[in-house]
Image 1 (cartoon, helix red, strand yellow):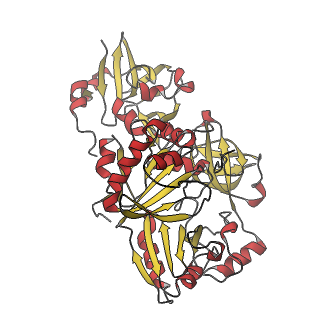
Image 2: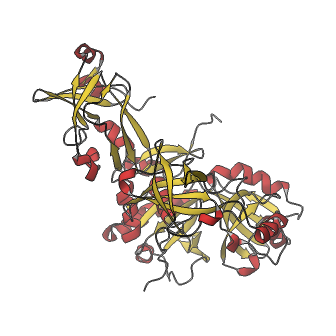
Image 3: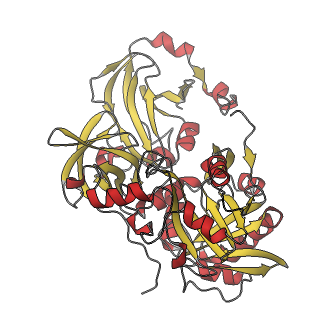
Length: 369
Length: 125
């Protein structure tokens, strides 16, 4: 694929803010702004940050059998949510692997929205079309919609100041269609940082004005634009999977500790394998490692050893700004998936000491205390 | 007045007060983002031009630092162990990596002088 990378409607605003732009999933995206990943990360944990996530894909599913279609393709049970509900779920393969992880939004049982990973838009689009024996109407709206996230403890205030009405984080994993500036958009109580936050899905034409309104509304609250770099460190600290790292077609939903997303009381693609794995267990499980700062950070592909034997493989690893240590996700032998086991992990070609921990590495703070 | 020479891979060697310091350029530090870890060689180690002599880790990336010329390490900047972020805040000053003895001084002539480095289009690969 040598196609010219796409630019989001916010591209010029990122450049004006001094962002370092990199190609990601076919888009030129901000990886960080001049203040750097650590400050952006801290802004989200302590104040509030704003993200351009326009690269994410949006599919609409419409028709009398839309509910059946969603139930067949995804492992979570959409009966758990009602109209206005959002659900984290996955497209399993018949072998129990993962085509993608995604959010499903129920407008009503005949109308759904799916937000999928940017890197998987083409493969997901082919997947949903291939399995459409339900006669539903599928629309790939990925290139018509932008996604702006506002995440962090002061998110409600920023949205309220920007003119949104009745903004409250009372019901995570819900959404409303609201009018803002005369245009309709999706205001979603969702995020991928472990903090309180909102995600706003808007038509591309509306996105730059909305971004600037939110930036202005957040100025007094220390709102910072946040790039994909800090998005990754935030989700990793929060113990959330990233497709292409923790999840792919060879990792099973059960291995990734995502049994909580499985609706056992319904049929779906891949169910047989997942039922078997639930009964028999799997040969590896996703778990966490902590490595002291002075040893450096394990990176994807690093081998984990325990008593000299191979015990696992790192899928994501980074310095954690909140913990001031290095953290990593790894697929590990199930018997080692208890906190506090001493292992070693490869960092730049050398084995260094590490301790196992149960993700999340940093507790989620979705509710005020 | 310090005199700097740069490499295509964005290391520098600077002549400061009669000694030679090696580090990474302001451009390189900016490209790496927040630096969280620097692994330095032991004093006494020798490297040939282009050989990996140090490793820099930022939140997002790991980068090798190559010897800009044949050299022997005289001492390293131990302050970077506790404050690796100095490489971001002052890469061509307090964020130096090592004081070295170039063993083939003529190699300096093959490096990029400061003015030329500043003017170079570094974004193209």
